[in-house]
Image (cartoon, rainbow, N blue to C red; front, top):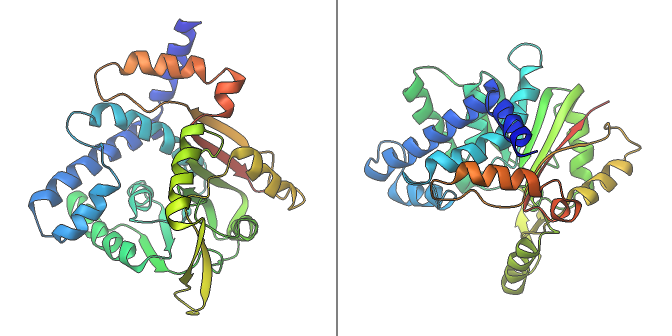
Length: 299
């Protein structure tokens, strides 16, 4: 059993998308190190903000956390690899633009949508860093708008939503809008923390005690107040219910990976990946995994 699990892990880690994603994570590490000492692209305050999203990324951890990150992004890379041409990606809630840059480096045409103007200001500057690093132009565009209001009918091969579904409110219109934006045969991929995990739920409760679950922010286009959720963690079972409410316009979702434990910061990754693989097949453990990656295919 153990040998079979390690064989499966080796098969995953031999995929081209996995290696491309792993390399990009090392690029992120190098970018942080560069911006730590140089003001060519980001101010010191912008660098600190970017670094706050990768608090455990350093020279001691990068070799291990890169593998975790690669297992997250490889599914999106695999989906994009099946599209015709370069592929078109909608990054819903793109934040500081890391995954938009990843897709851009893969050769895709990327449209990132984000409510925060401050985040997008940093994302724009990061594009220039990677264009200079690789000596090529990236087809990455960012827009300061609500994902619920953005629609480019049947334009995209992939709608990517990483760590954003917990902030989008209401959720049902997001699925409906994603369906409109996707080409037939396109993919919606959602990755986030699992609301059924006790530690995740506890951390979310702490946030809610301090800030509440919901607040109001301005829609950049209309200037009207719209709802924004603070760490309103969902779980795949609830996401499937939203799909059912759409008369199954998406095919049955595929839950590709549950991550119950964070990658170690010391050199025991081989033991970790075996333990994680075994534990994730236990139904109870699987139901409370810390992170999920779920794929919906447009019919």
